[in-house]
Length: 256
Image (cartoon, rainbow, N blue to C red; front, side, top):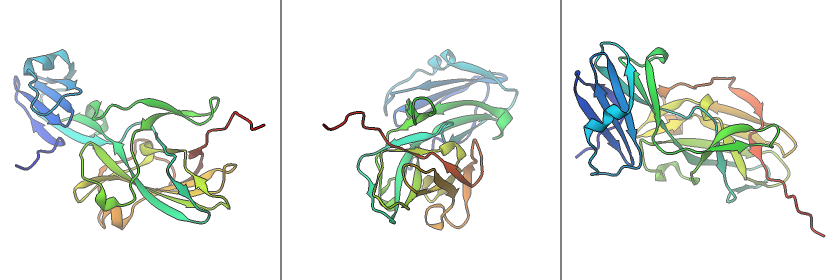
């Protein structure tokens, strides 16, 4: 039996309920005369019985007479910090690798537009973190993902988007990647084959004392020829920027 996607259109008449399962996440939906009850059930498992009567314990959204909902994927609203001690890039070398970004489930009433967005639900638990120095850093989400060197080895999973990252080490010393901020709020989400893929991140590293340039774009290899855009950037900015994208932990101990 083909696996049913968590995304797409749902139509329920007043009084009807539905439970939508995916991995450890379940969304309960109940239609009222002119609104919807929505309740997320976390840490569920396949085959677990959930009573539809529990859905009314969730939040009620009064949205009008339309019996249609749209469930769509989106990238997180804040940047994500990738931590690694297992990637070293030699001087003047370019590396492309991939990480998995946890997705957000957006629920729209009737049609997909900003004013009809009812709620957002993370499909995986995401924790906050801090990127940068204590006095001039920024709040972000922690990315709990390993890195992959081959796009083809990553299995399709509707809870995650694949993020291609290319780093060019334009320094005279090796780059040992410690903390990298991935500004997913400035990236597109594209459907390609069976995968959801973010914009490609292209970074040029010039050394610890310099800002690095970053560019977000598309690649035929990862996005196809015709870009099937699922979600636009939440926080669009210029295509090429100078940013603090790398952070290195300072050693507070001195050798005697």
